[in-house]
Length: 171
Image (cartoon, rainbow, N blue to C red; front, side, top):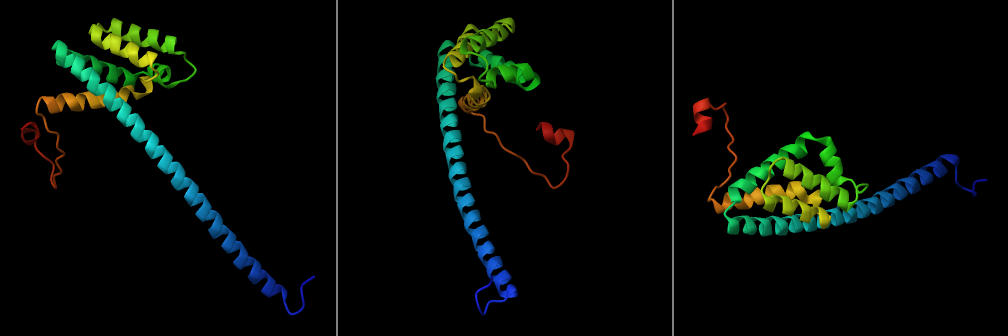
C-alpha cells in the first residue's frame, strides 16, 4: 500500500532516484577500493623493481670486478631468449608449485648446459635459493641498462614522419 498522496508514478520516480544514488555510492566505494588496490599493486611493483635493481647492481659489480661483464651479458641474453621461447622455463620460474630446490637445480642445469660463466650459474642459484627467480627478466633488463650506461651508451627512440632508408637506420 502506498502512503496517502503518493502515486505509483511518484513512487517509481523516488525508487529510481534512490537506486541511482545507491549506484553512485557503490561506484565510489568500488573506485576507492580499486584505487587502493592499484596503489598497493604500484607499491609492490616498485618494491620488486627496487629488489631487481639491487640484485642487478650487485651482479654487475661482481662481473666488473672479474672483468667478465661482456661474457655475463651474453649469458643473460641467452637466458632471456630461453625465457621468451620456453613456456616450461617460464612455468618453472613463476610457479609456486615448484620448490626452491627444483628451481635451483633446473636453472643451474640450464645455465651449465649452455656453458654459462660460473658467476652466472652461481647467481642463478642464488636467485633460486632466495626466491627471486620471478624477478629474473627485470634483473636481466636492469643489468643490461647498467652495463650500457657503464659503456657510455645512451638509448634513444627515433620517430620519423617518413620511413627511413636502410642507410639511415644503420647510421
